[in-house]
Length: 260
Image 1: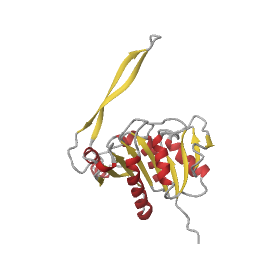
Image 2: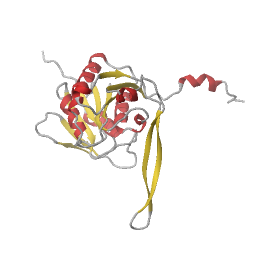
Image 3: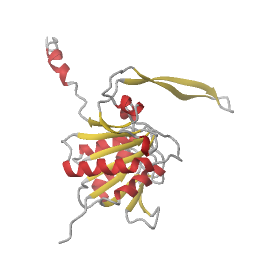
Image 4: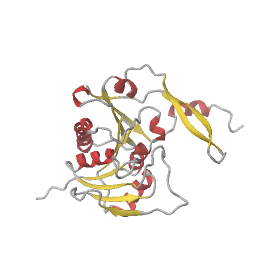
């Protein structure tokens, strides 16, 4: 009897030709049947944006004819890619959605802005186990080889054990040689934030414009956070939920005279 391989949806926010997604595809091809639906251009920082007032294009493409996966290039956001895959491209629900490998960190507060993680969250909303992978290297020449072994192990564990409803994994990998990665730590999200600045400039036509910059501030000294793990040579795994309700505050608000 033929054993059916798991169906794995692969997406990202850096674009379908980015080195990170190509590395992720190569690992997923060792595990299951792969379908790629990814943006046709970089979509970093898009968060959970969806395309509403513009048309969407989604074309079958061949990026590498020596690879077995089916691939589709989408004109929309990472979340659009997951929706398109679920509703138009795939003939059954995938067993797993993996997003990345992102070029740059999605630890701490960055998870809110991340297109990589928003794609994973969208899959989770649709009942698909999902993982977002990020490497702490923004370069398009980043070396993803040290990450591959750990990506494979984490994916195999999720396929074997499943994830609770409403939970996806946010995985961040330090920029280290494989021999220097100390292992994997399951963490909480660090209490950190960006202090942002807008650099005001003037273009050659005399029109003012702004360039966003900022400084990342980590005020969390806990040794159980993703930031601590990454700074100390570990891969961080944060179980992340898309229910943003502050459950602990409901009772207090119920004591307010809201109906007087």
